[in-house]
Length: 129
Image 1 (tube, rainbow, N blue to C red):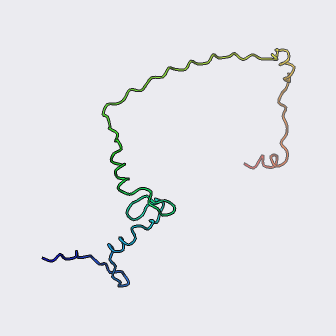
Image 2: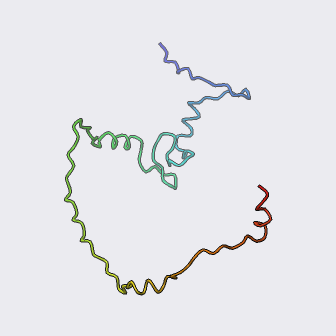
Image 3: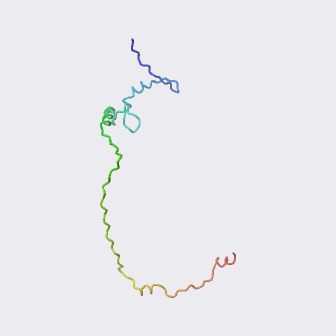
């Protein structure tokens, strides 16, 4: 029995061209991918000059060898911290105490509200309600 080449699927573009995606992918494996991940089409980490820093196989090996955390169902007890003592309250003292006689001198003694007649627009609008 003669070994036959696997049947590659060809895609037709909007312009009518036939494209072999597998061949296109294989020819561009070493080219740096567009974006901010700095990898090539295979998934290898690529440096600025285009050289491969780590292969995809190395990355996957590191990922699966790293220990994974285990979730516990029981809540953990938090360490209690000592409460900080409150600072002592300092009493404020008045530097220049005001005596009652000084307060009396500062306030006017006999102020009465004297009637002032309305002036201007207030007087004109007074009877128009």
